[in-house]
Every structure is written in C-alpha cells, then in structure tokens.
Image (tube, helix red, strand yellow):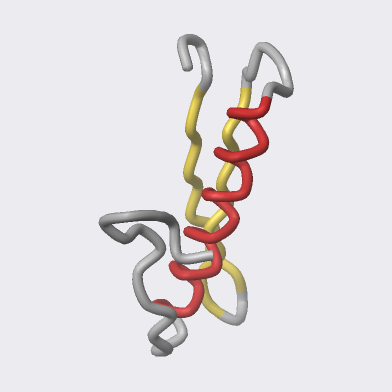
Length: 67
C-alpha cells in the first residue's frame, strides 16, 4: 500500500532482546487492512517461536494461509 511503512526495532532488555514491529500510515481500515493485520500477527508469533527454539511451521502454503 503506497505510503504505508514497516518499522522493526530491536531493543536491548535485561532479559534479552525485544523486537518491536509497527505497520503504520494506513489510509483506511479496509478488508485488506484486516487481512494484512492478521497475517502480520501470525508471522510475529512464528518469529517468536523460532527465537525461542520452537517450530511453528510455515504460515504461507501453496494454496492458502495456514490459519
């Protein structure tokens, strides 16, 4: 989406690192916004699982999302 920004920040914490993610400057909350927001949520849970040594499996499959 034109004008939208993806921002990833890695913050140092006493217990390790924290990944902050922001997807900002959406023009409107359209059906695409809802789909994109849900997809980012799934990806963030998979990144966390991988960082913690767990395997969540792929989110994207040939025929559909793995929700």
